Image 1 (cartoon, one colour):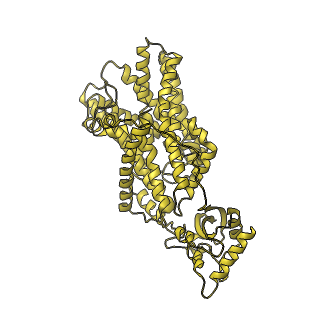
Image 2 (image 1 turned 90 degrees about the horizontal axis):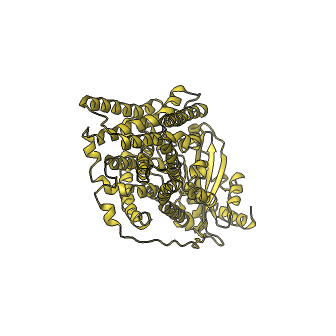
Length: 551
């Protein structure tokens, strides 16, 4: 421990052991304390950040740090207040050797062993929040302001003439599902009753839009919308007299690069907010985002961030953009192979089989869950959730659907009973895919065939069910077409990309500003979701006008 830190710490400790301590002894009061409902998941002890930073001693001020501990199978953090002359390594040493004591009792006591079946603490790491960090303002970004409001709020669909109007509704509903799921998942770190609430939602399908349901399948719906890329490329080939040239492929890929300005803007915005905003005690997971961006920013630029370990991705939720571009880049090859139908079917069938088998084998080998993964199953995200070889199935089905819809000459559905049978099978399949995770929700202790089969098949089957909805809507069967094709969806669809990128920022801000844990209830969650949604829509409109559309 450095000399200055040791002297200031001893001054603080001597003072709190006095009968009448001085004002800066409030550092002790800012320490995190064990709260109620430890069994229910309220293990984190954030303390009081602002109270700590407002304390001033003879030669030091209060510095808020967090000590991450493991006690048996429970991981938690404790907020502590130490002199600002202490570096992170100093704090780690003070904790490791139990130097922070009051009346010969540790200021960081373990959780009661009667509650966690283990009395020994193991330190994982420490974080300290310094108030002396000078912001880096070396980079200045200039943006072009364009008057695109009329185009965004236009109710004339952005889908090309000839169909697919139902895709606007499908896209927006999938986006709302994702925002709803993230609103429930992200606040886990500052919920005092997460375990209790999770037990409730896992047992009831009424919570299908939150952490209990397969929210991840909304992403598969977005991948399925790759059918538009197949139609776009086929249209360009027809205009080029049935020739697929390198310049045509280059122009096709360049169109997709237009996602980068908004993507990189959100990345810079998020880094700036995390670096400059005065956070509460729950800021610690987001500090890693800044550190990851310093090392792996280039992966976002090259759209390969999903190939990195997930804990190293700069702005973690942007993994989807990399995955989408990688899938998108395979479209020219598939469209080219379509000229030879037999070769095309062999390649497409092989790719679909590959993604099914890869998902199933990985699930069995790593014993992955099919339900919303917990922190004890990080392999789910690390090796399975964000990788192209497990996610390619829905995109491939989307390409096949796009080719079929573009080249078909006769209606697929000719009788009403065909439509009725199709809707029955579609809705039954959707219900089965949503319901099975409630049965297979536990992480298997051994390789499990049911878990492997579900993981291998559920994404392609979900894509097939949504494909049926698109086909039935485009052929005029089903009242659902009128709902999904409402002009109401068009403006929301126009800003959906910005909504996806910005909504986690608002969730992070809300979590980071909290001084104390939140109590998870249905009404609290509803207000969180609605608040995040309104802010997301308002800011997404501005981002679309100022950043996305100009490019």
